[in-house]
Every structure is written in structure tokens, then in C-alpha cells.
Amino acid sequence: MNKQIANGEGVIAMSQEIFSVECPCGSVLTHEEFAALVVEVQAHAKGNHNMDLTVEDIQNMASN
Ligand SMILES: [Zn+2]
Image (cartoon, rainbow, N blue to C red; front, side, top):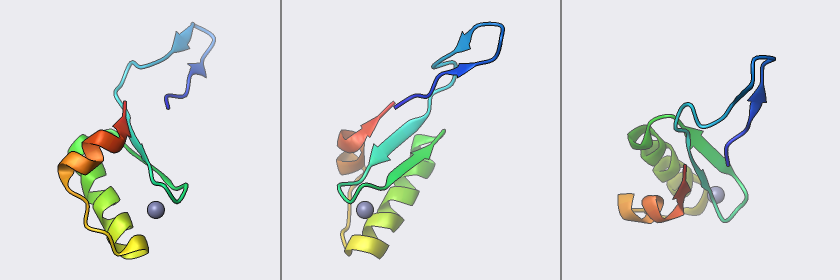
């Protein structure tokens, strides 16, 4: 889910890739770097749900 930012000179959208993952619990985790997002999501899943997610799992959940 990309937010559009109007800055008076036009609309900046997708000028920068932002990866985001929405956890089934409703938490949305975002990061500019996919590798860092993976770490965050894995920590979230482990800490909150006692789940071990693989990178592939997270790729399937991610949108950019
Ligand atoms: Zn969660």
C-alpha cells in the first residue's frame, strides 16, 4: 500500500520502493529494504505468534 504525497509540485508516488507486509493479526510492517523487512517480519511473527516464517513466506505476503 503506497501512500501518495502531494507536495504542490505534483504527486510523488512510487518514486521509492517501500515494501510492506500485512500480518494476519492486522499489523502492517513496512521497510524500504526487503532484507530488513524480512528481519522485522520474522521477529514480529516469532515474538507475537511464535511462528517461524521463511523469506519465501514473506515474499508471498509482501507487496510493493
Ligand atoms: Zn502479527
